[in-house]
Image (cartoon, rainbow, N blue to C red; front, side, top):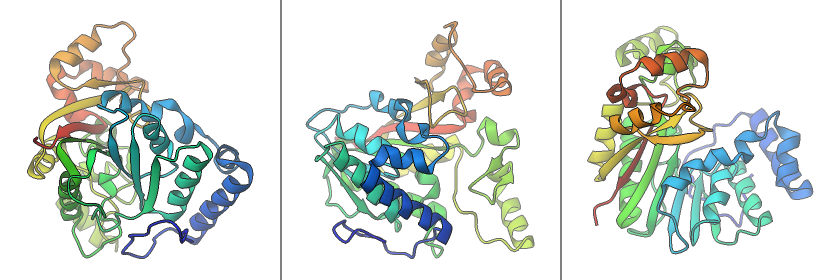
Length: 314
């Protein structure tokens, strides 16, 4: 159910299962009755993903101030929306799942953040805003799912469209912060199951033609999402019009949702970080060993997540 007072720009049918929809509806009922935090505690086994400050640690990298107007794409539980609203003048947040949008809006209301507005939208990868409206765009772990609900358009074309839209709604000199998963990240190369590709081991680390062939043989539709290598993502962002791309590495690697720090991914910065006795490369032993052995210039190609800060030319 979509809040009738909430702007709704959705173009495609919802894809959540009935069970998932009931769970999220219940989450919203509890949020109104018992408060958003109690609702999360009653619904999920762990609340860290929705409440931990490390979820929005990357905001420290961004040029945020009380004069900034920011667009967040993918509000989900509002964990980043609320953190942004405390640092900037105004936040517009878009969310493709109506129940998440309602929850994020309710969380903002309960936290007294009247400088945040949540809307349903972006399932068609179009942004319902005027040109040059924002100082910054936050696209955190969203691009890989872009176009999931539009089966008539190839994933990569939907992703290109969204990146061009981000460029369009930014003011000259504005910026984008983009994090997405890495097709050739160490974690997939180790054979971890890929949620973007039918939960197969290795997933999109396999050649595209092999994924397509196996999908046809197994009667599968196209993968739910698409992730890219470092060079491909760099090219997509550049082709959208952005410049001054700066890569980052969320560490310990494989903890990109909850990093303890975010290091510039150039070789010099990685070498400097490695000199610290407390620097942790990976969140488990194999990743720690592999990244210690990886030459600094190659780290950005093998990180589990790809992160770019880029600018729209002034």
